Amino acid sequence: MSKRNVIIIGAAGRDFHNFNTFFRDNNSYNVVAFTAAQIPDIDGRKYPAALAGKNYPNGISIFAEEELPRLIKDLDVQDCVFSYSDVPYNRVMNISSIVNAAGANFMLLGPKETMIKSTKPVIAVVATRTGCGKSQTSRRVVEYLMSQGLKVVAVRHPMPYGDLVAQRVQRYAEVGDLKKHKCTVEEMEEYEPHVVRGNVIYAGVDYEDILRAAEKDPGGCDVILWDGGNNDFSFYKPDLTITVADPHRPGNEVSYYPGEVNLRMADVVVINKMDSAAPEGIQIVRENIAKCNPKAIVVDAASPITVDDIDIIKGKRCLIVEDGPTLTHGEMKIGAGTIAARKFGASEEVEVRPFLVGKLKETFEIYPNIGRILPAMGYGAQQLKDLEATINGTDCDSVIIGTPIDLNRIIKIKKPNTRVYYDLAEIGKPDLTGVLGDFVKKHKLSKKK
Image 1 (spheres, helix red, strand yellow):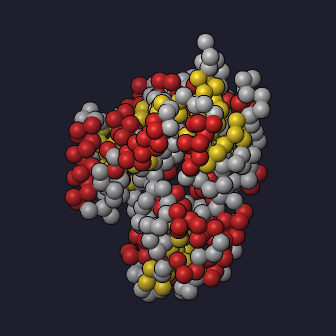
Image 2 (tube, one colour; image 1 turned 30 degrees about the horizontal axis):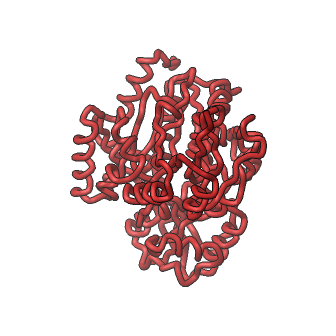
Image 3 (cartoon, helix red, strand yellow; image 1 turned 135 degrees about the vertical axis):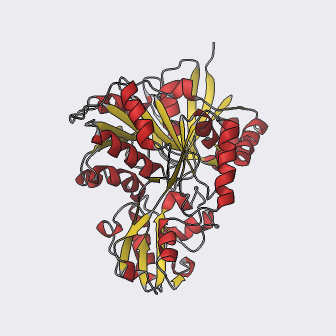
């Protein structure tokens, strides 16, 4: 029987995982191409032969998603597998229509085909959209488990934008490892908060190899924490799924793929940012949880902020810099920096568009609804240079840094600036302490003396 030709539609993450777990050694299929979207400059590469396995001695080419109709025809493709996240339902079906019109089948792979089983208990922290607050929720989970004397190893959803072979398995245990692995700003935003708090985090490309390395981490491993990316579902089979929802974007939890999958699979749903969201937005999220997953435990939570220096904000014309993906495909209009500007009395939130340099202009063309905030884009050296030039060239009194990393460590900001920090704070009961306490008891994990 002849093999079915396949294109995997992706964005340098879930697509590679779907290939590795379902297609790599599957003799019924022949993956003829990947396509790429969302992330700049990832098309035009290859998924290398060293990762692709014996069936793909020449590797697999990666093309721009816009080329799908041509590729389906030229490569005689039968199946196209949609494999990236944080996409509105109408866009998913728009791509399905493009694929079907070109003659191919449109596929979505589910958890049974793609989740890997661990030898350790797994907690997955996922979300309904990018920017809901997975990172601070993950930190809260880690802090509790560490307080019980447990060794927690985090594994982060992939962001492999460089040398894929070199990035097969990456371990981060100290800040110096960020430079060692040539991390982008987006990677640093996720890894740095973990390592500065004293826990190890893994990431990379081959998540079977990553999981086995994490389970045998030199520092010990009692629990694996899946630290999700975008609104994708876990690559590992979880024993506990915590899904974070955002009442600033009410209704998105049932209208973006695959966020609704996470909502329906959740054991616990954290409604975050309740301190800054409208009551009607919170109510919509509550109603959608009740409809989709009435058995889920619902935890109310806030994301209180602190800043290094309030005087840099008060009465000043401030440029606000926020986490890049949250503003771009996450479509958020505000973040921690904006909340700080309003809370501590900035006289103006400066419009950054007139001062954009280089590749940042392209970002605003692709995502015209970003608003006046500057996303901290840093997928490559040129974007970092453009970010630095844009910040320093903006007509403002000071800069509010709302990203989770210290930007001053990687670029030179010549204007007065202050960082904003945010953590998860549960409101009332039930809370994560109770949920995680039950998890520890169930798996007989506590080592606290």
